[in-house]
Amino acid sequence: SGGTLIECAQALLQHGAVNISAFVGHGIFPNESWKKFLHSNNPKVYFNTFYVTNTYPNTQILIDKIPFKVLSIAQILCNICFQ
Image (tube, rainbow, N blue to C red; front, side):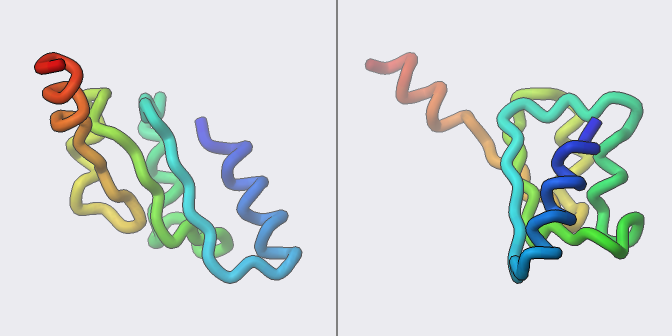
C-alpha cells in the first residue's frame, strides 16, 4: 500500500537526503494507493521520481501524474522472444 516507502522517505529526509526516488517493478497499488505519492496529496514527503513498469494495467493512469514515470518492458520482452 506504500506506507513503508513513505516511512523510509521520511527517515531519509530527516537524515539529510535531498532527492529521493523509488522503483516498483510491478505496481499493483490496491485501493488507489498510488494517490499517496502524488505531490498534491502528500506535501510532507516528495519522491522526485517514482519509477514503475507497465506490467500491470492500472499503471497506464499514472503516465501523466507527477512523480510517476512508467517504464515500458516491451523491448525487454522482444529481446527475450527473439533470442
